[in-house]
Amino acid sequence: MADLTNRERFLRVMNYEPVDRVPNWEAGVWGQTCDRWAAEGLPPDTLSWDWFVGEEYFNLDVREFVPVDWGMKPPFDYKLLKRTRRYEIIQDSNGCVRKALIAGAAHGTRASMDQFLRFAVQTPEDFAALKKRYPVDRARRYAPYWRELLLPGWRNRQHALILGRNCAPGGFYWRAREWMGTENLCYAWYDQPRLMHEMMEFYAEFTLQVAVPILEEIAPDYFIFAEDLAMKNGPLLGPATYKEFIFPRLRRMVEYFHARGIRHVGIDTDGNCEPLIPLMLDAGIDFLWPIERAANMDPVALRRKFGRGLRLWGAVDKRELARGPEAIDAHLRELVPLIEEGGFIPTVDHTVPPDVSFGNFCYYMRRKEALLRGAL
Image 1 (cartoon, rainbow, N blue to C red):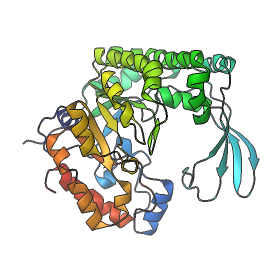
Image 2 (image 1 turned 90 degrees about the horizontal axis):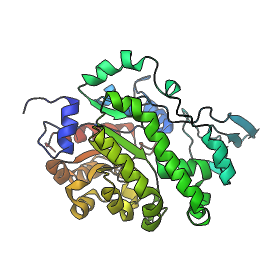
Image 3 (image 1 turned 90 degrees about the vertical axis):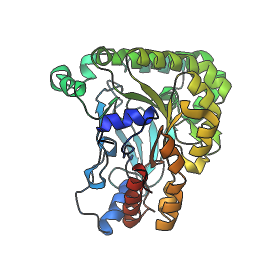
Image 4 (image 1 turned 60 degrees about the vertical axis):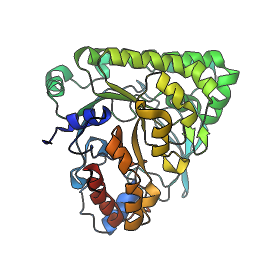
């Protein structure tokens, strides 16, 4: 088969058609991982911090993300509220007050999760005030002169084009969690249903309204909702709650994207979201990423259960990379049937942690390239 463009490979894999090789994508690394790899022989100033758009050192394929800003305008002021030798308490741009350990931070990556102390939305009145920070105001949400400078390249692209940078649009659960916090959100579905319906409707309408001018000019190849709505043992909201609050708006958004020519719409969530997958599929979602193996998300079992309607991205267990070449080979061989069938793009099931050595990751990438060519 003649060499295909990056875009042709992506579209053919997603359509279960033959390819010369599967796209070579990855998500990135922790800051601490970069420090370890530098000590183990990674040439200095080699890696970029955005592997989603490609990484020449590891021969990753190029992707392009339409730059759309769905964030607060204005954001909350960043404030350092307290600092000791061990930790700092800050107010971030979402209005969340957080306590963060100082030790171990590297290149903007913390060694542990922050402790979340307070969130911007406690009451319906808080949300009414917060919405004012989300004007559609498209002139401030796009790159200057994007029609003149960027649109011609998008129309003649040879790589996948994505509506919005990774995590930029967020998702229904993602935004509500940012505004209220996980624990408060778990109660709010039951204690404040009117507010939650308002939040979900606002997210859908705001996200679409901001995107309209782009979609009137170009049809990107995919859109992905960033959700992170599950933990190791299951989702953080049940199917009945998802169906009432999120499903109708999700389906409406997916239908709009399809009508505007976006072929594929997916969901990015860590953890085990399997109980929600039937609803996601009914809403028109057709791919899921990153298939976290520590949460018992088995890509072969998922394909068997849900069929070809659910494309799968990710599913490479980061824990296996730390174990060395034999474990890496055995793990990648498990994915061969999915590569052969199609509708599957393997990546590490999140960013690469610092227990993975530079040598092991280089070995993984070499063996993965063989997997992508069907030559493992």
